[in-house]
Length: 314
Image (cartoon, rainbow, N blue to C red; front, side, top):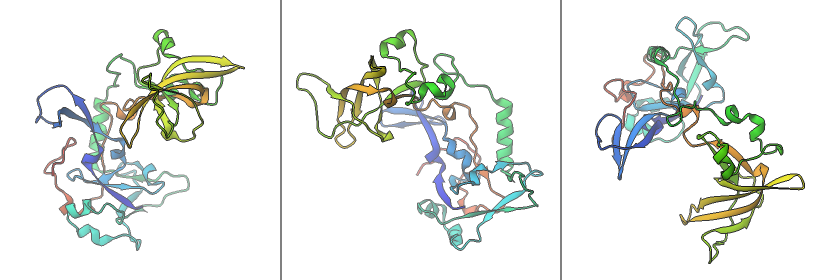
């Protein structure tokens, strides 16, 4: 499997917080904001490396990331540096700084069987003692995280609404308007998005602070924009929606307020708000997968001690 090199700091998750105690562990000041590191991205769980290195190796072949952990006794495969001609073994002699600056594929792993594997038997790798200890500690200390504001558990859209309620093609389901949500609110971790492509030409009305426009078809998911559904009307058995949304032009950085008429049901859906899915919950398990003893070059080890909250500084 080919590998992509990453830095641990690239997978850190940061959150703006109140306070002035900058300099304490996990807090930094950026411009006029105080940021606290609250965890790592899910991708960390699929990276390989050394607990005392800021360098991570991510394999991106189709099936390697489905190989689960097995104890030393259960594991029936191991990782070795590839014997494939495309593996650039000379890169292992590069300094850590040079390796990080490559920004391209060259290193490769092979996963080889260490014992006979029967038909239908699961392939298992030993993730290492550090990973195993972290997992056991996580299981022992785990408590279910609750939503900070309302005590509700984080759920995804399917759990909350059922698959059929959020399908664009289901004409029997409706999207609640802003007024209706005052009586029957959606969970706070959901938001409404409308698929709408803003016109290329500027359409600001001289007498208004918004652009009134009729909806037109778009198949591009990049045109899904957060929106407020204002009203809903039924014509010949079909529901049509009126929605408001603010869209910022990525080139001019100007924000235009659109009032869009005649959106069909399939142009609107509910999604999880940013950073509210389970993978962003506090206290979830994040740990790099360890490599066999002696496989990771010693000169790539740049952290003096294990520190999951390591903040890399140039």
